[in-house]
Image (cartoon, rainbow, N blue to C red; front, side, top):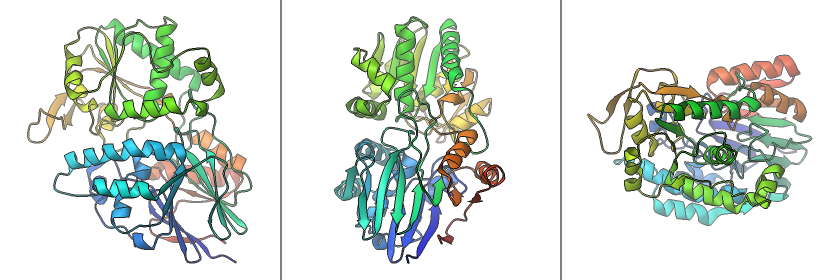
Length: 456
């Protein structure tokens, strides 16, 4: 008889900072080790010591390559972790540019503090193994891992851990299926416990059929104003989905072939990795590619490589579309474009992703008439005051997270004994917890940080 316990060290009461421990007798397994993002006080917490001894952890399992799930892995290694790291092959590949970029951002934001260094990243990858979906992996005697496609981003996985007679599914982030690019989320079978995300636990997205039409209308209106259309986009998945949609709109002559710029060194590297894994796309997209369509290239499309090229974009007059990171406008080249175009009434900013509390993206979305932007080379007392005169659009259908209705449907199909609801703002997590209890009559828990839960 195994003694199995769950302890939540991160991701409770927050959409970021995933870090869960599964104790099986004397063995300690971590699931994800992510950065806290968004609010300043949250980011400061990244530098505090782990609430457990990393040297005593046997294994780290990774659901996907977003920074709120992998961003503290090199710190874990720096602080003594020497175990094995396991994820899908695609997640391992994407983690390389993601962690290199994170190091660069951390050095710029916190020049006086060290979270981790280049050597820690190298050591991290010496411990990391990539595995395939559906492969049965023995973690240790009597305990196995099998990964299913979560449909969230390339390589994202639901981690199914079976120890003797108990099966626990860690969802990571669940995709907003059907996705424009990826296959639908797979549903685990014969699960006793689910540890699940709840980013959109208290609200539903607009209809998926409407998202493309809304994007098209926003682009048409922006082009008609003859101004810049600026889209803050996450480097993984959102950027590739938008390129795919814009490609089709231009090829089908639904919108004018205005200049389109991808201004994100990280997104360029990620897009190259996506191109290598086109076999992981859904059937309809694979058929387009087979028919000869380069889904990430089209007339007037330019990939921006250098900071100098990025600055040159501003000199190009008339309508243009700029995709840049980061998706929440927390650093990256997007902040320079926003500083330049937010005061311009002819400009349009299109939000297509989740904006966490405390982020610049959330301030813009909340309708603030002026915002403070930490730009690369134009600082006044650390931040620049920028008036907001541009048109702000919000399209929620492109989220790569399931909404409240589909999270509930996922639990219903999986039919576990018990659900632990995490990775959401408290309101969203608590709302979903209550819905699972009320609608499905399944025990649901909004766990406390640091508290242990026995799995009987």
